[in-house]
Image 1 (cartoon, rainbow, N blue to C red):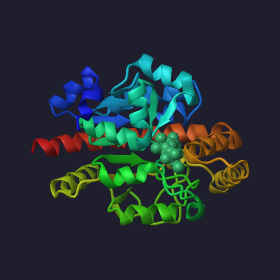
Image 2 (cartoon, rainbow, N blue to C red):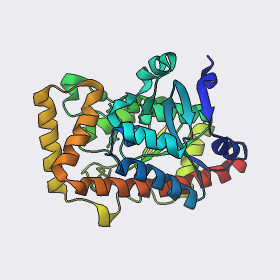
Image 3 (tube, helix red, strand yellow):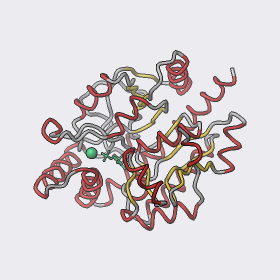
Length: 309
Ligand code: PSU
Ligand code: MN
């Protein structure tokens, strides 16, 4: 196996890693498929700035011209944002095809974890993770993100999961695969746009240093695999639960009627929810990503300090 020969690490990221400085990985499907242009590009650049302000180096991840990239230029981020859903959404199964054909791909949580791990990056900030979809007992639609969390040693900081998913089944899956689900400052799994979901997380941790230590110990014990940190959206940006749940129910029903399936399901639902709720959901989405970037940068700094001993 020689996956590193397919990997390009940006010089700034490489230098930080070599010096043991904190680095935070960022995904690119959120840019191409998760938000409209130009807010997607503005948000991606702002997230990088927030990570720097909090003492870490950002590494936005994508596949460009068949190369696995850890760290993108402004121009590359702009390209992904402008091209939008015309860029292939790249999960684990898509990587060999895109690399063999020299194509571009926007990385999901799963592929961002794979490339971050290859590069030696342990902390990753995003908005929402994929999970077990509603109706999965019939469709078997379970995101490859969950399988990656089971096996790949990267900490993913998210705002919980949207209730386009079956949150209860998603938690069951993660439990089976030994993935700790940690609420940051909460006992409850946040539901992305809202701080509450009605589901409990496994553990509550209130301190980035303890998040870092937990992840460090997991790897040090040889358990491997990922860890999911669920960071609730700040109160002032959270949405009305009834409004957002109505939009989600409508989007899920329409996807079913139209027979949307496979990799199109999540992008379809995200776009539909955004249409139904106007700019409100987008504004919340942007703020929760900023909030996760801050926590990830602080946690990455704690992890670097621990690794240095
Ligand atoms: N959920 C969101 N926003 C997103 C995604 C999911 O709230 O942008 C994206 C992420 O890139 C995630 C991917 O990894 O969708 C999951 O897609 P799928 O369900 O097809 O595995
Ligand atoms: Mn799926």
